Length: 118
Image (cartoon, rainbow, N blue to C red; front, side, top):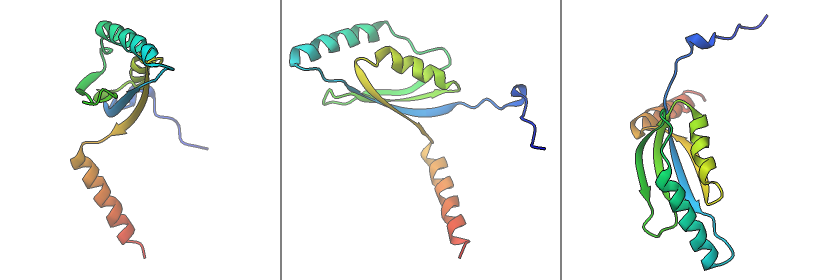
């Protein structure tokens, strides 16, 4: 007999950080791109992140070709809710990330593991 699943009420809720990058989708012409950019900026001016999502940093590239946001949430559906609103105008890449101190510690544990096996 297998293990019983942990009841959901006992799950530890953890906020995760994500790096979300975006680049504008290009149309057939400069005029099409300008219309799309105008509409995307209009939508963005009305947008607010969902209540469970914190934007830790939100920056745009100086070449006007997109940007990156570092966000934190315990609900990945909120990440999709944000990207879905702008999907016709931007391509998104969303990746979970760690603070670098945690990243280094875990990488060192990986090296120790590999060094311990001959």
